[in-house]
Image (tube, rainbow, N blue to C red):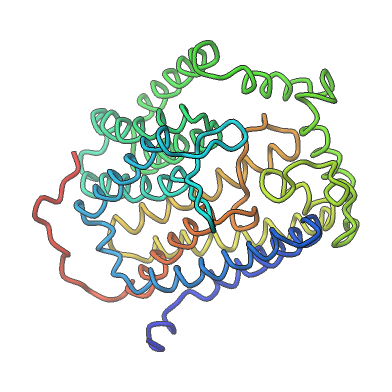
Length: 373
């Protein structure tokens, strides 16, 4: 076991440590009187780290096996369907299974499972990947959870799932004309969604993004308070525990959807730069792990996981700075929430196993029936 741990990418783990500490400090400063979010997040981080180490001992080829991938995909689709029968509606979205001690959001797990599925699919078809039928097949795999998540409705998770699919299609070797065609289809779908899919409050969020001052006490309140928090941090921030926007509850959801704004207010521009540096080091190691593997599946998985982290972090930060409409997306490794943290840590566990075996030759883990499409 000690020999295996020596093969870990400890730079990857080290780059995450500041983000986890900042998360706890921000939650401690802006949380409730009994520090509910702080202690719960500490528990989730501990569980996530334990899960990461446990997953890292599972041979990564297990996750590239068609039977395993299809089972996970089918299970998550079933859980998304069952939400409409036994899920808990929170803030208008039927996205959670609530238990006495915790809640679980299947959409978060689906993001990682979709990365596994797409990495498996494209790794087996790298020779004829330019054919348009592969886009249609993977689009179908993606479309099923997209529809189910959108019906909850959870626009933020829907966008992340679509971004993962589109990003992995791009890195897999799609032709330029297919990119143009996909962009055209995406624009057409976006127009239809505005009129027939988006709920009135979602339309209001987009319109408020264009002019948040039009309704400062209503739909534009969150966006304005978030921008005030980010701007008031200035160069060095107000200091931990001195963020007036979050501490005095002017900034809503400062523990989840607006934790970046709460962090920026307390740590300032310098803190935000350090945050992105740590995230950049993390992404560098994720991509390096994939690049160091001789197989296609690890390469594609690392790229898909990077897309996941980049898109989710960029959208969250963009929303908090008033650059994007509010959709309710957490910031990786910082926002409060067990489902999101566990999913990220499971992904890191898979990457650690890939890193530990990057120079070790293994026999194939069963090729019978190893095809997804």
